[in-house]
Length: 380
Ligand SMILES: Cc1cc2nc3c(=O)[nH]c(=O)nc-3n(C[C@H](O)[C@H](O)[C@H](O)COP(=O)(O)OP(=O)(O)OC[C@H]3O[C@@H](n4cnc5c(N)ncnc54)[C@H](O)[C@@H]3O)c2cc1C
View (cartoon, protein in one colour):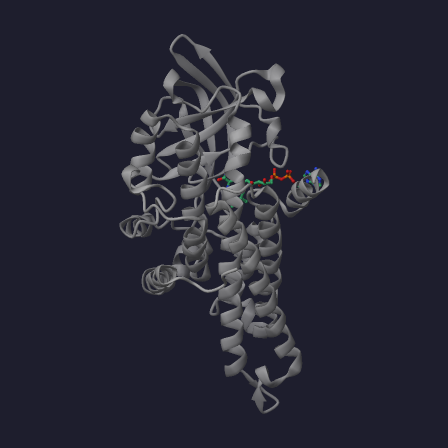
């Protein structure tokens, strides 16, 4: 067992932390209040190789593993979860799906510009009537000569408005159930493919979450991604990796909330002494630090296993479930430690409190993670 960071990982952590403090921290509240999607920041992250973290250099990526990837998402999310979720959706969902299931031609055409950050990726599974039950997808794709014709609607797609390339799941054979859903690659500007409503969200307001619409959208035959009928099966594999990044998103935000609370508790005086000297506050800080560390260990274990090609369905879900719930508890205690000041926008506590909730919902709710974990442990 090895619990220390390698020199390379420490260097990556330091680079991301410095970048986030310099380029993101000063703008966080403005982006949040105005719901500004900071496209320029993603371009800067691309220069650092962070838009193609898991992709080999020959396809324009940084050629790093999940441990590094989780470190990058964690450090960005410590400052702003909106940037964390953007990087996660782009890397492990859209780019990862095309890289893992795509042909050599698809890798060249789509993965290379995505990994270089020239294009932004989106991944559309969820529909208005198919959320937790994503196998109940209703969007359809019909083969018409040399084209697929897509019809339907996706909801809550990260980068639904700003994305250039979108992987979307649609039913190609209704009679085959889960094995009748296929994946497709869409490009911005294709006739019949457009963004619908951009959501006005509780948190992560600088990230773009939008409806995506297909209206008789004609796609070249070769834009089918993976085998016909394998789209949903491949999507579940994609989520095994994606959930590690959502766990990292949770840890990052929890760490940010914990640091804010720790700092404030040493500054704020009541009854003639810093509130950090009250045992009730110390216990909150101790619980936060312990739970964040436990979540981090689960997350990096799953990342480590993924890097070794091991199956991580249960471990990814355990990490995502626990980290998400820890993030919610940590942000709650952060507000509590700030008292009334935790409730106003002059301090970072209220934003963490709003942002963290996504972690118990996105890429499968906490209830769904428990179902996945139960299914895996009952198998063994
Ligand atoms: C900010 C944001 C970004 C997102 N980005 C993306 C994206 O990029 N791509 C994408 O495809 N999706 C995305 N999503 C969608 C997200 O994955 C779904 O919201 C999530 O899977 C839950 O689906 P739902 O919202 O339809 O809730 P529902 O499935 O309707 O669930 C409602 C409640 O019922 C519970 N429930 C449902 N079924 C069961 C069951 N069998 N047992 C017990 N409880 C159950 C749920 O846990 C939940 O508490 C995003 C969502 C948000 C909020």
